[in-house]
Amino acid sequence: MEATNLLSLLQKGGAVMWPLFALLVITLVVAAQRAITLVMLYRNGEKETKAKLENPLSILDLIAMISPVIGFLGTVTGMINAFKSVSEATSVQLQVVASGLYEALFTTAFGLIISIVATIFSFLLDMAIGKVCEDENKS
Image 1 (cartoon, helix red, strand yellow):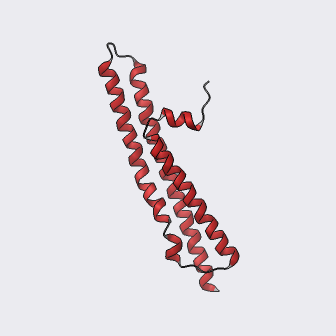
Image 2: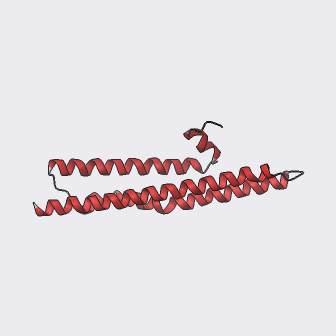
Image 3: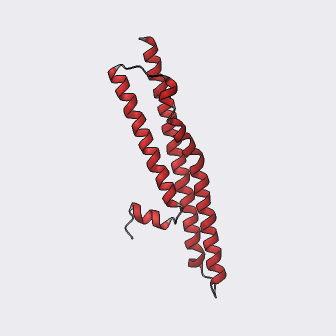
């Protein structure tokens, strides 16, 4: 069984995996920053407008929308590579087609996972912002 690490997974998915990985990192950074901000505001009893707290969540919403599309772009490029390999081969073997399909399916799955993660973080942070703003209004 071959060892799998993040770098090998990114390489197996092809060139489209790198922008997807960047979107994942941005998602995690924005979510962590918003969560820390909310915890600090809640602990210190500071007041902040709901609009200002929600503004960075639009980045998560954008990532949730575009990551599946970028993943599907990986599907298309993987299929192009698979068919190019088939057209250049003197005899068609399953391994020639399978490598392109692997790349295609891998990027699609990764794009969908990123979309799900960004959507969940956006939803949970929006709920937390609503709770913090409700608590601030009660004071």
